[in-house]
Image (cartoon, rainbow, N blue to C red):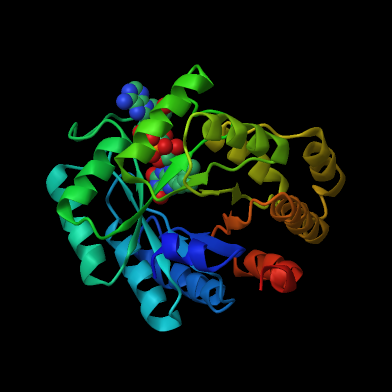
Length: 287
Ligand code: FAD
């Protein structure tokens, strides 16, 4: 099912993300985790794509298997910064052959060791290419409530986002954020600039102390005082930290739904126990 259609049919949705293994050796463990998350019956699941390309075939395989075995709609990611146009074409065709209807079109982070292809500079170009290969996909794009790290001014980032949406994004998923007021301000600014597609907040449950530094390094997201205090209190008690992190994420989600932002994506990071904790807390609210 197309995610754009799902959003029309359901007022509230909850979806989970998994990432493929870095090496083929890890495939079985990831597939097991992804299956356990799919068994929770989320509205859809996304499968990320390694920007380096090496194990990217696993994205198609995991996404296709999830859809076939669990009848869960899937969103397969595709990054372009290290890809040639030929590679993009073959991945898009593989997604099509596997019956995948939704693609998250991304640039990817520029590799530190340098780019191996210069066919694409931005996600917008990838969206035009996907559409020229096959115009039937529902396409998602990424957005950044606190601004993308490479763009000094948020107004410019929003202008680029508008170009990306105009290229053919059916919806946007956000970078993680930990204070909902950041999202509400961002929504006000993009709606003012004529970006009208659904925006799906990406929620990252922080369930261990080490994750805080990692998440900030990856995303540049601000950690609010409320979260710092929580992590400080529970950092040395893993079970309590996990539970507190799940509750913090659920609190964010309930506030979002209460304010009419009701298609929620959870960065479940191949952790079925965390996805289950969130689903158990929210099941009666989202169904
Ligand atoms: P773009 O939309 O191309 O934007 C990147 C930067 O370029 C921004 O600063 C933007 O303002 C600027 N820009 C855009 N157009 C122009 C223009 N015409 N001229 C000048 N500047 C311009 N990474 C992975 O490797 N695999 C994944 O599966 C993955 N999934 C993600 C899912 C989500 C929801 C998010 C939020 C991020 C994901 N990422 C993933 C990370 C993402 O690839 C990086 O954040 C990357 O740095 C930017 O990707 P983008 O698609 O947003 O790029």
